[in-house]
Image 1 (tube, one colour):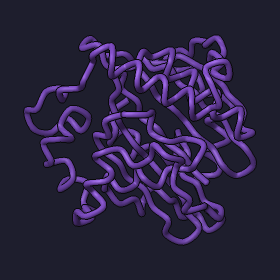
Image 2 (tube, rainbow, N blue to C red; image 1 turned 30 degrees about the vertical axis):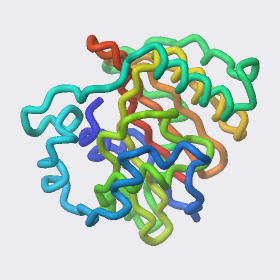
Image 3 (cartoon, helix red, strand yellow; image 1 turned 90 degrees about the vertical axis):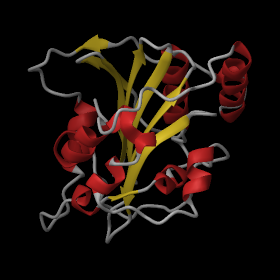
Image 4 (tube, rainbow, N blue to C red; image 1 turned 90 degrees about the horizontal axis):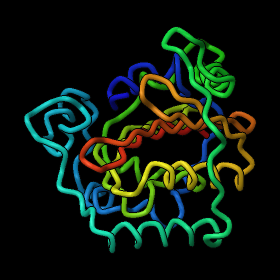
Length: 236
């Protein structure tokens, strides 16, 4: 699922959080190069304006840029996997994601995704996705349990802390295998007390879960270029 599609449907099919979020950045790996550079950039609140950035073209569908040049060397991949293992307490702590179950195109989303969608609308009927701002800085503000995968290349990010909302939507690329990425987020979710549901729908592997009023959804797919594309949505 493309980044802007996720941003558009977040309040209905994903999660926009409304309920006392935390500003605590994700541990260690949140500050990937794109996020770090963006901290000094002007915030782009207009989605069309953000979409004109050629660096984001691979995910936004704008411009003519191809998939960016990602370091896919064995050394880079192993370094990322090693750091991911450190973040969960060691390789032996990494557990495979649950076996996926297929969802037909017209089939309802997972229980976790539906529960997350309910949390998207505030009591007054307002919805958090209406207030999102587009800037890579939001990748540095992900919840501690759900950082960008180590050495991931952030393509686009959006979020809001307006009012009671705490929504983050981040798209990134990594050369690390799909199963490794799913294992990382499944482990992080369980360690943080979240449920983990694994489904396959429209070519995406989808991990989702809730803990109280907080929720997450991870959309991941392997691209022909040998890169894993991840769209990560979190709420606090």
